[in-house]
Image (cartoon, rainbow over the protein chains, first blue to last red):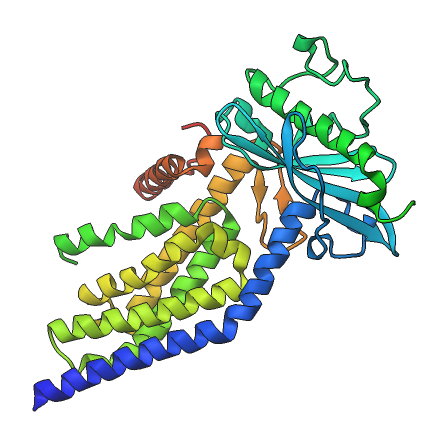
Length: 201
Length: 193
């Protein structure tokens, strides 16, 4: 009898425990998902200054055409606007690095100048090419303000390749992949400016 | 406390070393630990004298699992950044409750329990403060959303932020404590191990 009651008590405890956890999970799931989205969007959008846009760029992905570029592939695009005017276009670009694919988020303003670049995913060698994943990133910062025609096509390369950019120390392939992906994205922006910005600014 | 108890209490080390890479992380873990252990002690009291032996263990397992899961869900809801960084260690809190139950921690008097918990919490915070200071040169980074913490110097010793560095820091702390209680002279923590 005693065994039975304690077995009953234990199964009751199990049921109550599982039930409570289930209810708590169910009632909190939407808020957790919302928090997750907020963190994701902060992570993506910190290439833009917080006050420079007032929409939710991630809620309105752009439909991109001809996404296969010479050195990279575009996997997505977003438009940031302020008071209805487009201020920036964010392009997600994927290219082949030294040890896997590199995903960059490239922010370009309405005039075709680079606002910032952030690496979203990379598997480059830690302490060498892996520095690409640091944020804030001084090396990626050197590209800010550049556009597809300034520097010229030959200038858009590492100094080693007669271009004008320094490389990440000890990571030529990673640096080359990043430069080419950024240049690709800028050229893509120039070619599809009207479609990306929605209307003429 | 028995020798065996000491061995399995070293499971605490995982939580201690894992969550103390920043003051915010340690504070979150300590708060969660106190909440879960407190709720566990409260709920387990009526169950303890109704069950015995293996059944007590099973009951404590069920209760600890429930409380830890619920605490984890709430942590995700309100402290998601913390949970993403340290959620891995949150599950261990439940296991720790079962271990503590097994070793009779919850049968001690309330003051004794409070003394031990406070000691552990203070150790966590001191270790976290030291590691954050040595590793990143900040204090309290990430405690509040838009506060960068108290920046004392810009670059730190990377070793201090990783787990092996935590073990070394803990060793230094223990050595400092021994020296303190031994000769009662002030020993400064060295930043280079």
